[in-house]
Image (cartoon, rainbow, N blue to C red; front, side, top):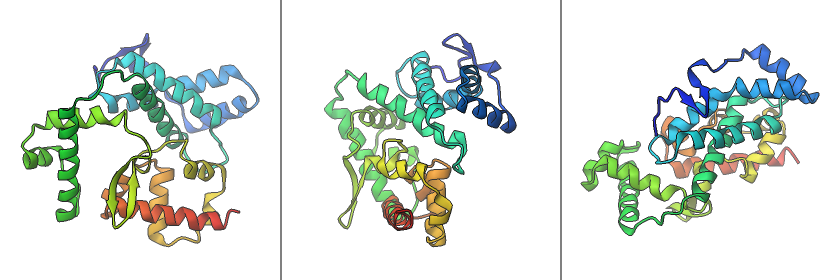
Length: 258
């Protein structure tokens, strides 16, 4: 994949329009009224989001034109379902949907069976990473993992990428004192039922019943679209702890939203 490709699917990415906040609000008002031209203009004004997302998949062997088209489908779905009454930026809402659409495409179109050697490399890297976090209380770099297990960082990245698409969202990837951490806890996906109700209800009032750390984690996860791994790094705790705190916070909030 060419990360700095100028033209994708006939679109000159160097000339993509950039909408101002007041323009976005005006366009969405027209979109709600059924104006298809406004929707098309809004989508074009947010194509930079798709471009930024597909750069995250630069290590894959997928054609950038294909990823861009799939990303645009995710963007269109985000426009169709976005609720302007929630205190959430459109980009925060749209990016996880674009990523999810691309991941599903890669999963469904992955006809190559991952070799045992690739899986072994990936699991060695994951195990080394977990041990590093336990010892140093911080996330290791790919280079540090490579030095620990004696495998080149390029091979590690390739192996980890190879096992991502076929993995079930319900597969446990970490277990801390019986509290399992699942793949779905590591990504933002609109199909996650806990996120669905968060998008549909008023968050601010319910969040008043949380402590400061829980509020901070919820804001990072649902307003800024960060993964649990990114949140763990920012607040200097383990990903398993973030998972527990997040689930407890959501449970508390639900009590005040019934």
